[in-house]
Every structure is written in structure tokens, then in C-alpha cells.
Image 1: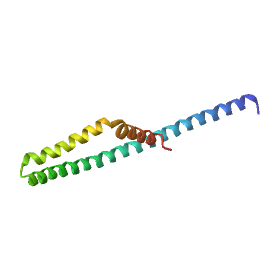
Image 2 (image 1 turned 90 degrees about the vertical axis):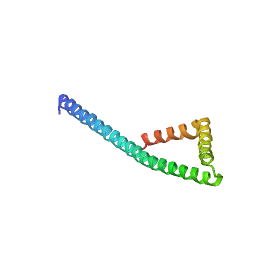
Image 3 (image 1 turned 30 degrees about the horizontal axis):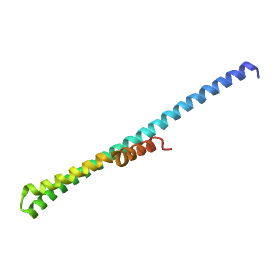
Image 4 (image 1 turned 180 degrees about the horizontal axis):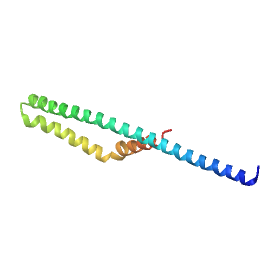
Length: 113
């Protein structure tokens, strides 16, 4: 075998290797994007269902408390005050309870092997 043939074979092998690595990268990126997208969509669906549940439970709690206090305003004001306090707590602790866990979960999901 001459040196030219060896160089041509090496060049051909290198091209095939690079093309194979590019295809592998595309497939891995597609898999990760698909996994992330499906997880996000399922989380949105579950989140929307949970939102509806909390909404109707809040309305029910408002009516229940209004019935207990014999005052329509009092029941709904208590429910509103509860959500206001919950919002304040989440606002104060948002980095620890919301931002960091969600960021960590997204990073783990993206770099999952």
C-alpha cells in the first residue's frame, strides 16, 4: 500500500467518524429536547388540573366559611387573607422553595444521560 492510499483511507475514515459523531449529537439533542418538551407539557397539564382543583376548593371554602360566620364577605375575606399570606411567604422564600429546586430540576433533565 502506498502512502497516498493510506492517507486517502485515513481521510475517508475521519470523514465517516465526524459524520457519525454529528448524527449522534443530533440524535442525543433530539432525545433531550423531546424528553424536556414532553415533561413540560405533562407538567402544564397537571398544573392546570391542580389550578382548577384549588380554585374550586377555594370557592367552596369561601362559601363554607361564609355559612359558618353568617356573612358572605367574611368567608371570602378569610380565604383571600390566606392566599395573601401564602403569597408573602412564597415571595420571601422564593429562591429557596421555587427558583433553586426548579432550576436544579431543569439542569438535571437537560444533562440526564
